[in-house]
Length: 200
Length: 69
Image: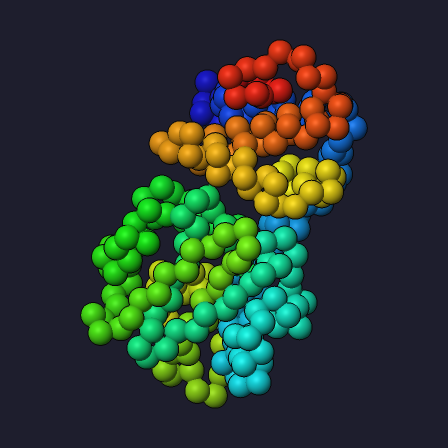
């Protein structure tokens, strides 16, 4: 029997965690607490409408509009709402700007707090125990291991996200982007630069 | 599901987050998503017991789960 027909006729075994989630979903649906359509809507929203492309637009706008940048640094939540972004885990958003002498990086030491409205869902490494523990203890070394070289004379500020506050890094606008329009600028902004584990 | 439940129960995300932190802390080496599901289990069970939807006397597993081990 070919591998392809194996896939069609012998579905892979469900893992224990998948079984637990399915049981929980079935139980809650049976009790009328959640419904599949609501779940589908939420999944759709988090797959297609949330993501770092939102944060990239915020960054590009801040690079081009000094007034917007000022508002963004004063009140991140209000400023991202100007561009239509907001919602869970974005209620208290603080934007921290990188400069020639300061490099910012975000972490959640206790769990995985992350600014969903502008960055989507966090990557696996952001949630890992080594990242959560080491970024507050040895940020420069960890950043170096992740491919982000920060000069010894550049201050590194580590921001620990919590229930109260989520953070977003405003990267330094890279050289060679003079004359770029907003959309083009947004295209050079990466998710990792907005977490602070890389520079553009 | 966690998001749907927080909204459905009219709670704050932090109410779920506290369960997540406790689950991670209870077993830091456990894979993240296993801790997440454990937290979700505990969160649901705690809320349903509080609202009387689940009787207090319902048998518990070690984690207070209502959906299996």
